[in-house]
Image (cartoon, rainbow, N blue to C red):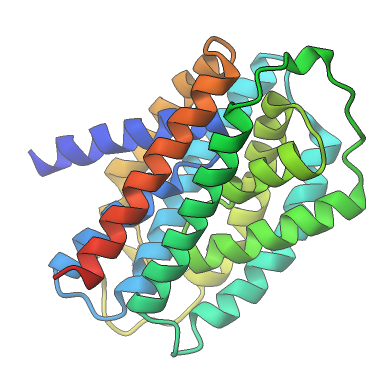
Length: 271
């Protein structure tokens, strides 16, 4: 029964990932964090982040494949974002494994990221002007460095793909169309998360996670049903990205991110 529930949660995370360009980590990582905490696992934060990134990678990869089939892939911009995001995730990984970054810091940091993204997306959803009637600027290397550096750092500190911050930055600061920002985010996350997964998999961990199947801090056995659901859900989520109105996607993202932030904070500080 628990396996089925995790697959269904993974599908939900994948739907969010594909439709909003956020990687699905706002679903995967909190769920894994609750599982690892409930199991009494030591160092639950790095386990949650590393395993969550594996789920996010599969969802981002599925979304990128669908974007390619939809002829909506921005290769140059996505690769630039991924390269600079890889640098950011390396810096974040060093902080993650420093020893002082523990569950309270993780929950506060992750919740602030969620609330920020929710505010930005709600604000953007109030703008009813048709995106096709706007003028946009090019997404150059400077924009990719700024966006990817922030997104990559957040990815390794919060166990998300960074899309929850990168999409609003590209959409609001660098004036990219929402659907283009989502596509760039998907490809960029594939690259930067892969860089982070390699580093986290190479860490020598003495004790296993919940399951005996792990690579470094990546609990493959526990993350697999979520990743499988994410793979399926992201494929359909990318289709929804082209079917549902932009403001509804952005408002839906804002509502979900706010709920997850409150749930995380309550779970640690409310008991």
